[in-house]
Length: 140
Length: 468
Figure (tube, one colour):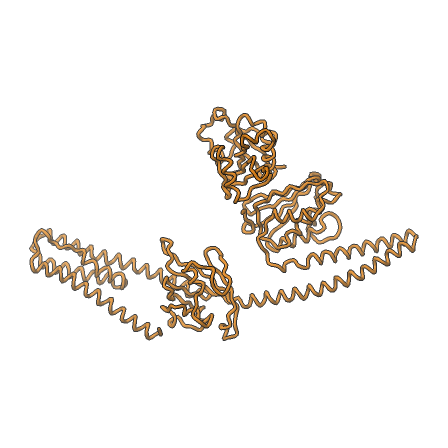
């Protein structure tokens, strides 16, 4: 479990291909991964926006699920980025999982504008989009 | 090419231009008149005026100060002769007058733009001319197009003697032979060849050499810096190169290194001498403990032992200081440094989590010593820490590397003097860490809350870190 170097970002992009086609940008992102025998088995991304840090891209391929890899990866991200407040759009069913890392639900209007833009298509209907804005205050 | 050649060429150039303008004026105006005299078909009148603009544009461009006057005279001749030779028609007089005005306007606009262009060129030349660094510029063909006063002074070669010269002649004052300089490498896009190592600094190429030909043959260290001259489409139109005499800097650096080496030798001798005497003192103190059993004397010996320990600690610190600043700072990968430090320390039950994988900072090569002292303080049994975490945070003013533990922390009263030199208590070596970081403008402070752990923030300025 470690942070990926810029040269390894394409490997993460490859894994994320099955996850909304997400990609990493070395200029803005920090990507954390759990690796098993050199293979990426879980990923999480922390993206720097001008107004705050957004956590997303938490993804474990189907064949590696239910082994705690996502938990470890997110724990690494939270520890590495704990000096800043963290924001995220959590999938509704995983809000409890994120609460275990100190994330709490917040009204969408409390998200920094740069992060909120991602879900403008939902027009404020977070429940309809099945996502929940969450926030974690800085600190270990 | 000497000054007489240049003047001759200039005069010849001026005569040619005047002749071209006069020839075109006669040709276009004469053609117009001839056609009128012969009798142009009425449908074609007035005759197209476009050819008449050619001598006006050229005159305005080549002689901006007289361009407007020329255009006015030319337009007046055109208007008068055309009016006289045309069939009487108010329409024709009106259109001829309009054309004459148009010709004057064209001449005025071209002259105005050409004047502005000349002023801009003049300003640029003045800037180059008065740059404190010796500077010259070459065009795409490698001919000298600028040679300022500072380079005249440095090389003894006057501008008039070198302007327009190519075939690497401008290298002769520096190398004694014609050969490509950095500016040529910029043009050729080939920074890798040559006699001296070349580094890139942004878009500029930089090289330092020693040349025996400058300073009246006494030689000097010089630094070349060259970059491309680009046009609006970012195409390379030439290259500009500045040459700085860094002889004094180099000599000072060498002198400082020599002085530093001498001091190191001296302090090394003193250190060894002190250590030997200290060993003798420790021996006597050990004998004293065995020989006397009077509590008062033993307490006295104990005090002497503490004093000797203090001296030993100072010797250790002076040994650590020995090499600081002797090697130039460099970009150092933080995570790798932490890994190396961790491998030399005993962590026992304390965990270390470092999250600085892509971070590099510009620091003294003894950066590892900084982490060693920070970790040693966290690992001290009295600290009671079970975890050390190293992270970084990007801030508007730079990057903070944060080393924190979950031990007892540092009492508020001690924080003030945490980074001053001392031998005992929490913070031993922090003075050294502070000094190492300060070499490259990095600060360190402690921001933890007593009771929840120590938190050291290493504050790297914006230009001193990079995420790779």
